Length: 158
Image (tube, rainbow, N blue to C red):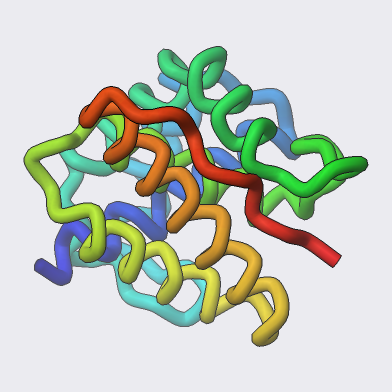
């Protein structure tokens, strides 16, 4: 499972890099394959990152971003916007949301736990609590949607 864990971390980093530099999806995937996967990111060795899973995550988030971003926005507290969030938080939320929505063969709890570990590497307790609350809200919304129920109230951000 370490390969998928490292692929998730690399995908979050790649999405952050895309936002920061404007590089395209194939360019960032190629750059990570040549120079990052097999190396180290934020002190974590990525030598056993699942390359195909990494590429699927990055491409999938970009392809589904017009669907993912409104879902995240809908679950933010009033007066908060996706643009107001830290870029790394956005990358974590987008990648996790992609998995929760489009990789339904994976356990939602396991997906959320993986992204909380990634958040743990970058943020303090308050940010991690926020990420957890928002991912739980997205998961409940997906579960309720599958069951034909209305969405629940928004995650709170103070």
